Length: 147
Image 1 (cartoon, rainbow, N blue to C red):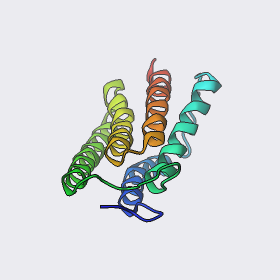
Image 2 (cartoon, rainbow, N blue to C red):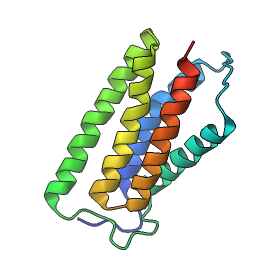
Image 3 (cartoon, rainbow, N blue to C red):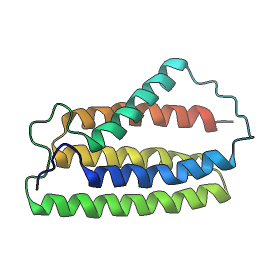
C-alpha cells in the first residue's frame, strides 16, 4: 500500500494525539507555570514535535511513501490504535491526579507512535525526528514536574 503526497492515516493519528492536549491547554489557560528548563532543550523539543507532525503526513525525502505489505499496514493501524487508546486513558488518569510517572507516559506514548510509524513507513527522517522529540520531551517533562 502506497500513499500519494499525503498520508491521511498519519494526519488522523496526529489530530487524535492533539485533541487531549488542546483540551488540557484550554482548561489550564489561566494557570501559569514557571518552566526552568534550558531553552535549548525546549527548542529541540519543538523542532522534534513539529517535524514529527509534518512528517507523519508528508513524504519529505522519501522515495516510496507506504508499506511493504498489507501486514505492515495492519500492524501500523493496530499499534497506533492501541497507543492512542492508552494515551487517552493516561490523559484521563493524569487529569485526576498529576504524577511524574503519568507525565512520562504521556511523553513517551506519542514518541512511540511517531517512531514506530517512521519505522513501518521506512520514513527515516520521521524516525530521527521522533528520537529528537522523545529525548527532549522527556527532559522537559522531567524538569516541569520535578518539585
